[in-house]
Length: 231
Image (cartoon, rainbow, N blue to C red; front, side):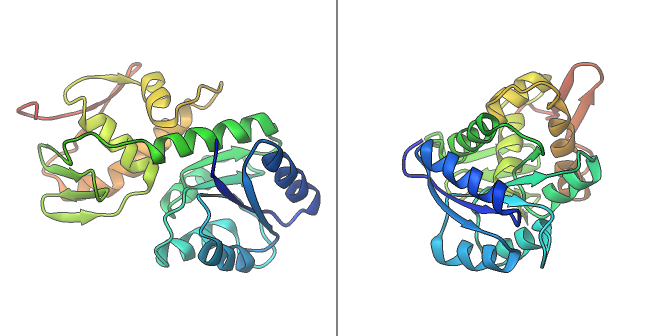
């Protein structure tokens, strides 16, 4: 993908150099750093399009780095590199504003595919109608703002894409495979759990502000955005 600047943050020199070299070979512009504090500085000064963030860093973990840069108004998508395939870690990553995660050891082809998928969905052109309103939730698609009964709710780029997809198909059951294909735009085996994780955290943000839960689980099938009048 052309004109994409990637910030790589990993404290292991071998992994950092391998990622940087491989991503440059794939056509990306790469800035590589080895600590959380350096990542914060680079995120502010270099204005990367996407950030590859190792979770375990010597000075501050990747979750803290992401929380810090989000508080600074930096919205570049964050792809976490984690050595532990634990749901708790993944949920933490989502809560601080992460967009996806890859468990070590990973293949370089998978990293490139994830970056391309994230950039496609964050750079995708919006529909002509700038406002999408279904039931108690309204989305301003030009500003990427979400309002629930008049309350402004902050979502990560991936949470926003997931909510918009559900709202665009009210009262229609969407399978996890459909959601994975539309929101993440890849199909790696064993990744259905990421859909469950994002739906879970999206509910935590939305449910306290709605009269009833709007995202419903259809066991064995998928999820549905409930709307009484269908719009």
